[in-house]
Length: 312
Image (cartoon, rainbow, N blue to C red; front, side, top):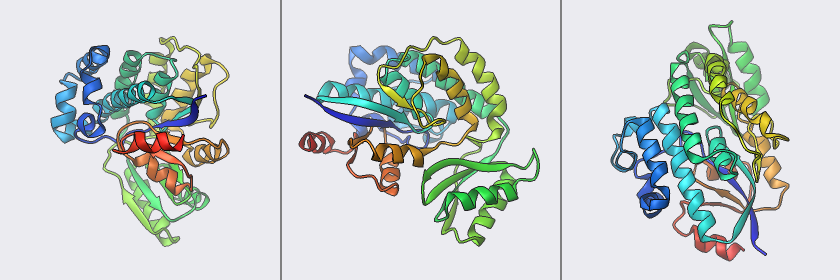
C-alpha cells in the first residue's frame, strides 16, 4: 500500500532564475513527453521558455503575465517527476493563489496547455487592473490588521484589505498605494514587528481586481472543467468543490478574495498526512513552519526523495 500525502503548489513570488536546472527538472523538461507543454508556454509568452527561465532577464521572469504560466509549467514538471519517481498517492491538493491552477492540472480537471492559456490571460488581466501595492505585515494578528484596513480605507478610490492570510504572524495587505501606506503605519503603531512593501504594482486579492475578475469570468466560462480526481482544497472556500461546475466561480472569486492559507494549514494539521510543496522554491515550506505544521517537505530539496522515502 502506497503512502498518501497532501500536495501544495506555490504561487507568484516563488519564481526565480534557473528553475529548471536548480529544481532538477531540466531532463524532464527536454523529454519528448513534455515538449508540447514547453512549446505552448513559449508561444504564449513569445519567448523561448527554457532559455528565459535559465538565463533571464529576471525582470521578464517577474512580469505577472509571464510569471504565471512559467510557474504553472515548472510546478507541472515537478509534479510529473514526483508521481513517476515515487509510490506516493496524493490524497488532497491545494495551491496558494496561482498554485490552484497547478492543482487543477494535477487532478486532471484541465490539461496543462489549458491551464497555461488560462493563467496567461489571468496575468494579462491582472496587469491591466488599476495600479496598487501590497505589503506583508509581520507580528500582528489578523483581527487587528483587518480592523486597521477598515480604518485606512477612505472610499472606493482609497481601499486596502487583507489579501493573503499566510500564517498567524504574517498577513499580506493589498489595495491602493495611499491606503496601503496608511495601513502599514497604523500596523506599526499597533505593535507589528515589520511592514514590508512587496515589489509589485498590482493589488492581488483585493477589490481592485474586480474588473479583471469580471472579464476573466468570460474566459473561464468557455473552458470545460472535468471533475477533479483528487480533492482540491480551494483558497476561497477552504473546502473541495462538490461539482466541477463550481470551479469557474471559485477561480473568479479568488482574484479579489483573500487567500485563506492559515485555515488551509489548520485543515492539513487534522489529516495526519505529510505535506509536500510541489513546485519551485520553498516559500510554502516557510509558511508551513509558520503555521506550526510538522512533516512538510519540498520537492526542490536536494535530498527530498531520500527524505520522503525514509518517511514512508
